[in-house]
Length: 67
Image (tube, rainbow, N blue to C red; front, top):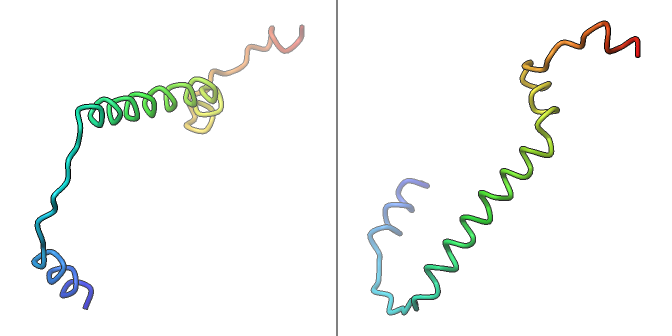
């Protein structure tokens, strides 16, 4: 039933008259670059937890624990 409905909706298209000004492209680029920057900052903040969760954390030296 879902496949039939999807096919019907895809075949029942209509022309859309829309205008995208030049500023729209730069806005989309800023959103994409901002998202990439946010992901980078989140990874940097949680880097040690991420490495520990993936099992790549460094083993603690016994000399460091005694201090």
